[in-house]
Image 1 (cartoon, one colour):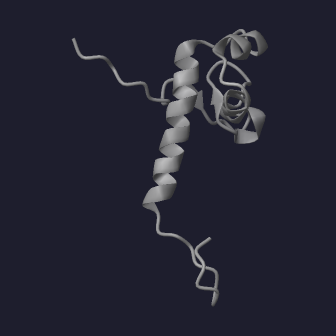
Image 2 (cartoon, rainbow, N blue to C red):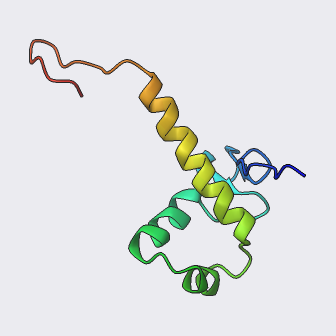
Length: 89
């Protein structure tokens, strides 16, 4: 049986009425950014779940999938060049 790949569509939402439209874990007010910040600071799921007990492993996977998609989307756009500097920004 094929394993379904984790995506963020079912677990990460953006709603202007929740956290000013920042991407959050569905059913919570936990921003994806906060989950990623905590994992970057200390990649310990036990500590993450102590801070945000309502999170699940699937929520964390969805946050990571969201971040991966954001990076991939940025990579697919052509770089912007500062006028006259020859440096991509």
